Image (cartoon, rainbow, N blue to C red; front, side, top):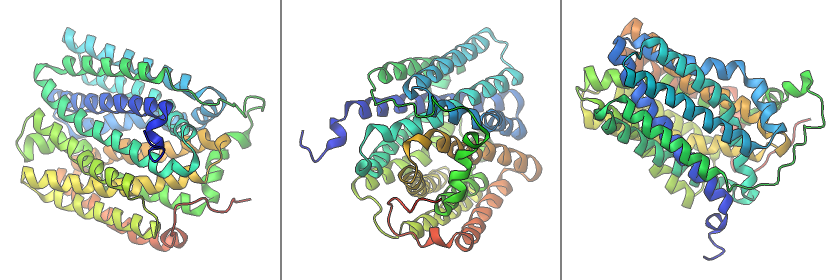
Amino acid sequence: MQASNPLFQNRSFLAFWATRMCTTMANQMMMVAVGWQMYDLTHSAWDLGLVGLYQFLPALALTLVVGQVADRFDRRRVLGLCLVAQALIVAGLIWATFSGWISREHILLAAVALGVTKAFQMPTQQALGPLLVPAELLPRALAFNSAGVQFAIIAGPAAGGFVYVAGAHAVYGLCGLLFVAAAGFLAPVRYDHQPTLAREPVTRASLFAGIRFIWQRKAVLGATSLDLFAVLLGGAVALLPIYARDILHTGPWGLGFLRAAPAAGAFCMSIWLTRHPIEQRAGKVMFGAVAVYGLATLVFGVSTSFMLSLVMLAVSGAADMISVVIRQSLVQLETPDEMRGRVSAVNSIFIGASNQLGEFESGVTAAAFGPVASVVIGGLGTLGVVGLWMRLFPSLAQRDRLQPGPRAA
């Protein structure tokens, strides 16, 4: 292979990429099964929101701990332990479902356990990825990595929806196999592990270093908080079981396609970005993409057509992918390796808040105002956030190129 494709010569990066593919597919399949199973048991939008909240709270509580772990210990081993733990959680769901005594409480307990494992997994894999490629290839590697992850998010829900016909335990069983496969792919990953924090005591300053680092870099703070509030308000993933069953009148297969649609749009966009990385006007492009995300959410909220709903979800996914690549590039390019674990831990809270806490927000507003009003309010809120953030973070709006900025004191 020619040197013009250096990413495909990097065996550790490709193994890491395959690991993320398997784990993402397993998690997406599991969320289809958990969402449909919970709604089947309770018929409650509130309970669907609680699944997201119960995954988010452990991550919030462990923020300062997981960053220290990612910076002090071998990131490959930490990630491997997370995969083993998730396989055990899946085994518990299989047992409870197959035995017939699965309940609302069991699902919420599993959500808490998943929240704990993901709290360690997300910052660890975010901090590990940049160590496997040279800095000049990082934006392209992030886009390629996102393409694989988005493909898994497409295939995972669709497969989960079809496999659910055989029962939730069948979906959980397939998830368990994928977690085992992910651990196998992770085994050959190698990097130069230099635990720079291992010789330093844990202090208040080191615990809060990640928060201070992001606060001092206004472009990074603006990008991460924009993504947080946009997806927190505009996300409708938690309500997809309600849309599939009560508004669009499809079965589990329809839910699978609805969950896969944003990833389909994101996958196409990530492929485009791999070949045509964002090189100019990065800030304006990011704000424009988030505005499109809000508009697509609005149209989805009022749609009663299955095909139109799929298209709008795909558009929202494509727009979100642009924002994700710009945000990840800014964070990784401006963060030194010895800080990546702690910064990634804080970044993971932003991501978790926008996803899991966003699911809870959707469940609460849907319980109060109905699912359609919940999604419409969220879309309008996203557009409002775009306008406000352009005024609060003018340096981000004017950011031109994705390259390291000046170090803050």
